[in-house]
Amino acid sequence: MARAPPAGTLLSEPTRRSVRMPDPVPIRLLVADDDEPARVLLAASAREIGGEIAVLEAEDGAEAVQLSLQERPEIALLDVSMPRLGGIETALTLRELQPRIRVALRTGDPLTHSERARQELLPLFGKLELEDTLAWLHAQVERVVRAEPGPSVPRKHDLVCGACG
Image 1 (cartoon, rainbow, N blue to C red):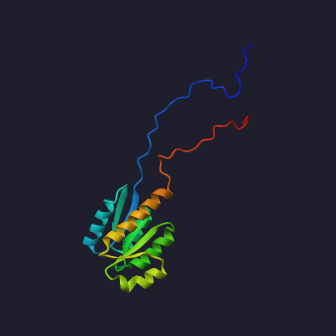
Image 2: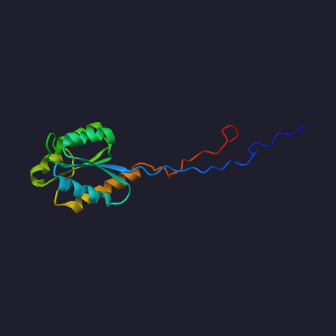
Image 3: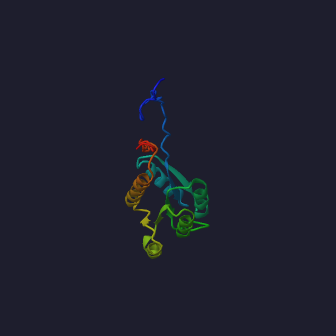
């Protein structure tokens, strides 16, 4: 009569499979500004930051909210003065809909809007402060990347037998 192999003995060679890792999911950035040249410049500059960034563009706050509901961006840069729904109101709405979204405001007149932005804990940049805006954006992209383990991070498995230790 054949004896059973000792516990923990490998009976056959494991099958090796080639697993294709999914492509990295781009970080979604929402840029809302009714001034098309300013919006296009900011969107183009954001794409040059590096990493995978998908830029969603909106012409006003109402469109920004609609895009946010559809696309769930992680980061938003909003002009303060837009038709239909202003940037501050849009930012507050986005935060209610997506509490983890990172939002900053841009304006041609930072002094006028600085107190309200400070009250709402919203970073505020002048439209002429493109370098500062991009530095903030880069920092937010880094935070999003660190907060979400990518698909290339292998899951850890416990290889200890639950019955025999």
